[in-house]
Image (cartoon, one colour):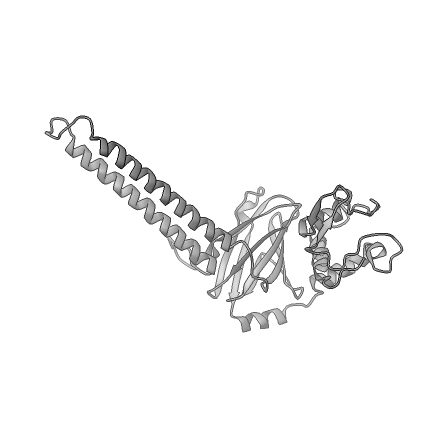
Length: 313
């Protein structure tokens, strides 16, 4: 990665696909530019002042057929390019179900990462080569953007919500991480590195890190310390919805709507519990806005996601 290069390294599956798309668009644009330039040159010479080239009204077939032909060709080319670019982006939107999940919190002016085993990093991220990595990201202050040029991946990190991004690194090495959204006076210093390691090296690195409680375990402790278990535990005396198997489940609301209990819905239920009331329950849950930060919310949501099993009421 040292030295000057006109092209960033290609170090992920997404990078190879994006490069193919970029080169394809460059070739098409170059061909169109060359064609137009050649026509301009030919017409400029052929129809220059004083030349003997025939002038006058074009034959009907040229005015009709040529016009229809180049219009149809342009339309089909635009549709093809739209399909190609759209398919490339859609393929990169959903992470594989077995992806390694890493939680990232952005703040002025650093990146904080937390691995499944509880290991933490600041302005650095270690990942195994060949394994899909899914990032669950949020911001504590303003909008940031997680950008790794070598992977050709970039995702805005927004306060008040969770955004996701995934990649599969293909080449060991250390690559630059940038914030691609202006986020304040020290925006230029907000960066870091992503280190791609062979799977066995990553396993040794992860084992050597200070072991902390994993995110679901930390969320379970928060669930108890914040008093949530006093209402949502199966044995609780308070009439509150059961959270067993809640993550991803369809929920009927008091206003007649049905929504999916995804990360955004559960986050709002913690911070703004009276916004979407569950049908059959009273609005007695207090708001935890200001009592939990973005890191706590990530832990709580990881715990709720871990509550798989039979749904009990």
